[in-house]
Length: 164
Image (cartoon, rainbow, N blue to C red; front, side, top):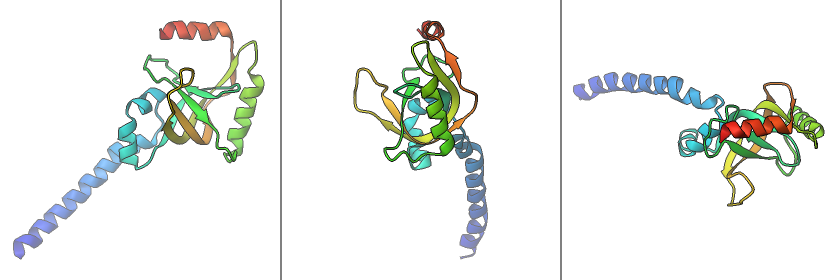
């Protein structure tokens, strides 16, 4: 009985300290934003540790009829572009709606509008489609991290050449 009490007095605080250290060092890093490449490459780890498919992803949001989030660095991973799905009921933050309207308004024949953003939402795998990204984020909120800017076709072509 005495050994059990001594073991409990030693093991409980030790296990508690390891749990606190794990939370501070590892789980907090999952709450920060990550790139599209990181979140798609390590999707199972994020889902397991968080208990859901909720992600914080940072990149360039390109406007137009179809919204998509591209990796800022274009570092060449297979899934550097993620589709963006707005909820059917349209219930997202007002700032997010204003940003999307602005990007769509600025995008046209002379180029695309983009803005650096942090997207918070649920990551899901889309059904196989030749012309769409493999993954999609069902948006809860879009937080702007920079002002919208116009990107002409020549700039987009240059970025794609660097990517290949």
